[in-house]
Length: 302
Image 1 (cartoon, helix red, strand yellow):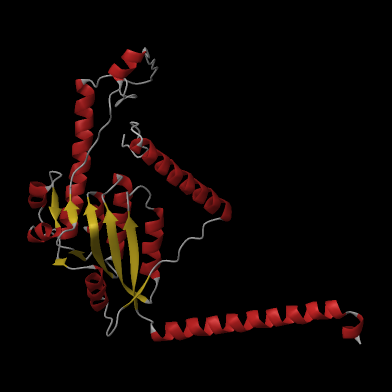
Image 2 (cartoon, rainbow, N blue to C red; image 1 turned 180 degrees about the horizontal axis):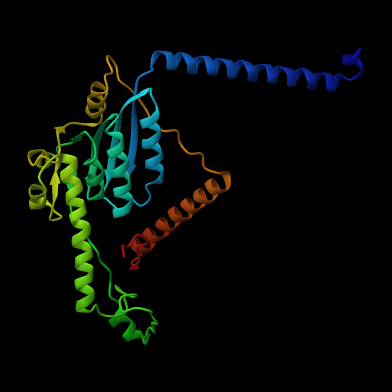
């Protein structure tokens, strides 16, 4: 009777019930599949990726800690594709890996480049795998800035600075550096450099004086780094995973797992997507300007 009196409402109720039932079935199947997968692959190698300039260590620290405390993760591979970055973030990741190697095997896998801060991080692991042509090394510290004083004078700009201490505006781009400032910054650079050398020596189990001989900022290929004791093996990412798995006691096929991706809020995703489209349009416009004879390049480095 209800279906005859209210056919549309009846149809909606039936459809809602079917959708709800389907959702329950899908959820149960997903849970069963997940439980089945975990039952088969209970021992895994966790992979943490360090990409680009090292500016913020928070995500890496969380991933390292989670893998360290997860009993299903028997070993960790840190995949590094980075030219370096900030000293502080590199040291934070180095310290967290130092804690981790005491309880789990950690292998560094170097991609195209793992230099400066990238190598700093790798030095904390149990072993390092690099490609023969990987760019690595660059054990050093650099400070630099551009002086615009002459340019400002030409256009008639004269900066006024009020400061509370002699060195508060050290490194100012609108005036020449004094000798005392240069001495101070050189001392700072040397101190951080010594920290770098000390940590690399400790991580690689080598005397500090041996590391210091090659810690002048020079880069090495993976092959050169191996001959100097900065790298343990030559190989690719899969070789690093295999090595980590065996060190972790995994027999048979080694399964890898990555940290779950952080979900981006919708508005942030929308803004980032829009910014990316604007950037692409600007590049295309800049290319057309160049082809038309104009001296313009949107990607010109500072």
